[in-house]
Length: 186
Image (spheres, rainbow, N blue to C red):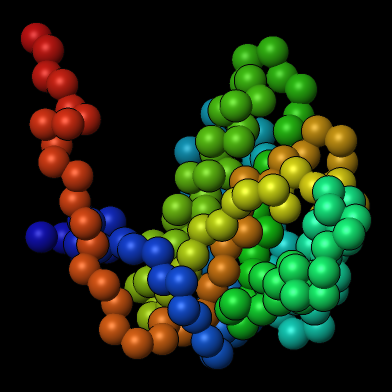
């Protein structure tokens, strides 16, 4: 079996990540893999914001502000949970689709291109010995977070990709039976 097939078939999300995160050369490798994603019309819709250290603390403050916008009476424990969300890994990469109007390349295709780029990062990170966890949720659309990341009105957060060194033993990948999702026609 090829290395590529093995990497794809064994990709899993790793929720417990610790330092170290990828260094500058490793990040260059990850982003070089990301931008090889299929890209109809060469729109290059991706924008990646790699955050670590104090940048994660500032992201946590934006998460808290976003949470308070929806729940202004949140108690201290809920506020702390929002602030601590980005601290679950030593690095978080915000993968953003910069949507550009194009009559031949709809918005959804540009989002899919960025999603594919994120998958490329995940596979390359695994090859470099790192684990990842793709997270989305309410923070991907929260105005306070969008402002914090300097996003334009048409931009969309596709993923908060948490990345670091896996803690503990990785669980085995679970496989969906193909007869549940594959149909052959001739």
